[in-house]
Structure formats: C-alpha cells, structure tokens
Image (cartoon, rainbow, N blue to C red):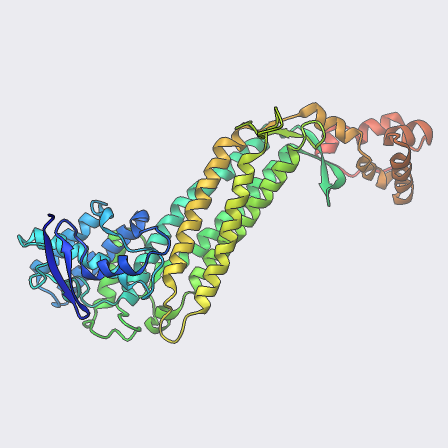
Length: 469
C-alpha cells in the first residue's frame, strides 16, 4: 500500500498520499469542485504567475524581517521550481471553484511549502519547519495573491494571442497584394454595388484586424496595475510597513513587465472592470473575425451556382451522400469558436457585476472564460491562417466577367449622363437582360465607345477618378 502522511486543517484530518506535493486544502478542493474537469495545470502561465507571486512575496517578507532568510530561501527555491514548470501536475484545483480562488492560492502554497521542506532536508507535511499559510502565504491573502497572479498570466497570454492575431493581419495583407489587380464587383446588402479589386477587399480585412490588435494592446495595459499587499480587503492587514511597494518591485523584476501598485488597494481588490474591457475588446475581435469568415464562405459559394470568386483550399469531403461536395469547414469552425468567445463576454460581464462590497468572489469564472477564449480563438486563428487564408486562389476571369455583366457598373456614368438616365438604363437592363454597354453606347448613344473605354478601363475601375462630360 502507498504510504501516506496525516495533515489537518480546522475541519479535521485527512490522509494524503506521500508522493503528492499538494496538501489537505487542495485535496478538499478536488473533492468539492468537479465542475469543468479542467484543472489549473492546463494553464501553465497561471501556475508560473503564482510562482512569481510567491517568490516576490518571500523576498519582500525577508527584506521586511517578516520571515527568516533561510525560510525565504526555501520558498524562493520552491517558487523557482514551480516557475520552471516542474510541478505543473500538482496543480489540480478546478479552474471554476467557490472561495474566490482560495483553493488555487492554497494549492500553490502547499506545493511550494513541500518543495521547500525537501530543500531544507525535511519531509513533506512537516509544516512546523515551513508552513503553507504562516510562511508561503505570509503578508498575503487569496484576495491579492490570486488576482495578481491572474493578471500576470492574462497579460502574458495576451502577448501570445496578439502575436497570433498579427499573423492573420499579415496573411490577409499578403493576399491583398497578390490580388491587387483582380477586378471584382463590390456588393452592399448582397446586391451589386460598384467595382473594386479582390486585393482591396483582402487589404481591408488586414486593416480591420490591425485596428483590433491596437485596441487589445491598449486594453492589455490595464493588467499592469495590481493589488499585491492589499491582503484581505485592501487595508494591508497583517502586512509589514513598506511590504506592498517592495513586493511589487520584486514581482515586476521577476516577470519582466512594468507592474505597478494600485494607488487605492481597497478599490483594486474589488474592481474587475479591466476584465470587462479586455473581454469586450476580445469580443469585438471575435465579431470581426466571424464576419470575415462569413464573407469567405459567400465569396467561395458555388462553385457553379454561387459567387465563386475565390477558391478555399479543399480540406475534406463535404458530404456523406453528395459526391464531390466540398464545404468551407475552416471558416465554419472559426465562426463557431467566435460564437463561444462572444458568449463568454456575457459571462465576464455578469461575473463582474456580481461583485459585492469589498471582494468579487466570481473571479475564477472570469479567469476560466478569458483563458479559454484566448486559447480557443488563438487556435482558430492559426487554423484559419494555415488551412485557409494562405491557400486561397482567385477566379480572375470569372470575377472580371461578373463586373462587366453587372448592372451596378452604371453608377460610373452618373457624372456624365446623370442619375435619372443612369437609373433608366439600369431598369431596362434589369428588365431585358441587355448589358449597360449595349443600351448606353450602342442603342441610346449617350456616350462614345472611346469614352466608355476610358471610364471602364481597368485602372479607372480599380482607382476611380472623377470623369466629366
């Protein structure tokens, strides 16, 4: 039989298998919170951030003479092991849990304490030498340690997401350049509008994504203000004088990002507005990406009875009954991922609103919503780049023929023959099936062939200039 150690808390005692580095409070969390089936071990950046927080706290406590230097050394050693990812499997608390993240905080405290105990030559669970609460959690509360770690992890995860998102901007920009001379019909309300190029259409996708990348970077800056040292509610109870400033300085140095201490720790301990803004910005990005995917599905529709202006790479057979059918599966899966992210925006909104008095206990579900949204959308974007955008081709002749057969090109005649005459031509063309050229040039002789060639030259259709009578 596996050996165990006996641990206790104020609720009683439990036998903990000796190979585990987490202890009784984490054990209770595993029993209580079987919600998502996704433990925090699936978020290594969160674990790394917890390690940074505990190391910075130990260093600050040592400077403030709150803990013995040898204890601080052991905590720093344990924290470094956690930061290095060597004990990720020991972080078993469910991402969604009650207690405002206390189980996550104690999971870190217990793991680091037991690593530190072994470093000092003791056995796991011999907490009289190094205690999860008295030492690893010294001068802290879940209410400052958890949100500070969450903000750091979210900041780092957003860094990675933004790089992936920037790759989508680049992919669309390259297609914009590749298709810069492919004439096609622009459409409004799914009806023919005026000519443009396929390159302009794809370049616009790149531009709109670039705008969202900047908005995300702006929102990301909100995460740099943290409440370490606030302890329970922001009054700094149980923290020595000067500890918050020293701790945040160590934390910024360890993580390598410009973290700052909130000027109002009581406000910072309860406020989750930064998450609402970031998630709203992420929702905005998801909405735009989904809209673009809708466009790609429309532009590639057919191939014989749809728009058929572009070809998406064929990735798999599209039907179990219709031979030869190929579906736009990559834009479809990205659409669905975007729907998930849009829904998580409401989750974050409601969780932020549910905060009461001096603490918002709903932060774990905010963390879950934001972590999963960034992961899923990042995966979807990379899939869109690799399996769709990079392989798109244009049906150049088909695009050109649709432009020249369109009634929408009559708009170019407005400055020369006027709106009323142009509308009359459009109406006759629609009714009879005749081309705009046949009616305007050959039958009504409203303009010469030479003028028609000038107006409808490729250069003028791509880069329209004002042409008068």
